[in-house]
Image (cartoon, rainbow, N blue to C red; front, side):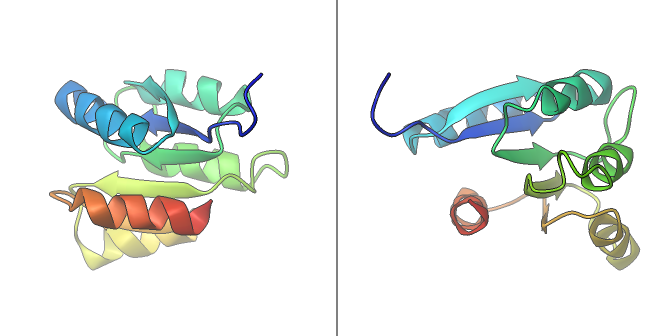
Amino acid sequence: MRGSMAKKILIIEDERSLVTMLKMRLEANGYEVMFATDGETGLKVAQEGQADLIILDLMLPKIDGYKICRMLKFDAKYRGIPVIILTAKAMEEDKELGFRVGADAYITKPFEPEILLAKIKELL
């Protein structure tokens, strides 16, 4: 067991190239990364309770990001896990809905990795 446990980040995103880029970026910053490429798997992994923070896309196969966020945030067991929505949906109403379902942050694609990293640090 190493002294300081790396924080675990779960990425739920169906765009493989983005998952790869995020994974490399996060691991380079000392985070442990898990990922799922559809909503159903993502929700299951989130509920297995391993993640310290979740990066969530909205447009996902099987279950959309709004639903996942709502299911986690309205469950006392998972409410404390910060959720960052990372999406191409940049409309004001998309953003409002994101916060209504409990997201802790809403970042639109294309995004600056530094902004995402700063937000992760802030939420953890």
